[in-house]
Image (cartoon, rainbow, N blue to C red; front, side, top):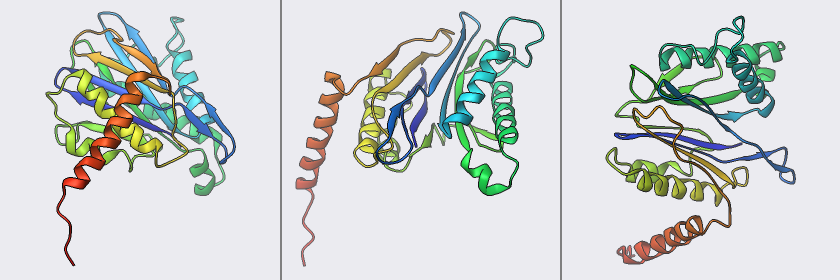
Length: 243
């Protein structure tokens, strides 16, 4: 399992992913789940993956291979004219990988399933984020649905729904995502540190700030403990339910 979020603000996009992979309760490992393609001044594209690791790694490898400069390597994520076309390409590539890996019915296909968040901006268009399903189809982020989650989503969603504001700063957005991830880590062993973060400023067409948050990160620890203390204090202030 995993946990990834792609969030849209008025001033850009914020991406965050965990790095834990597991093959049982006693076999955890770390694997990167955030990947970026950038042509400065022209496009910035970020992909985050959740699901079967072999499937997602094969999909990323195909996209990377087909983005090389050799003329016959096409279609390429660096040639698509719009983010919509990028989402179509990612969906088609994911479906291609799953289709080549499985041919023994729905049960086996489910074992190789994956979901993808793809976001960014191409010159001439606006920053946006898409959620790509294993079948290759996808949906786009909207004002009513300003963030997408993949993986273990249920524990970290309540804080996003309650506290998200499209006007918030990148710093506040990262604080919000850290709380969401921390809540998930404390509830599910299949999600864990370190976390990868990326901030994209609208119309910059640059990768922007990227960072890996380790468990020893002082700011992460302060947010984690501070959020726990704040919840306890808020709980104590609520009226008791008299019997």
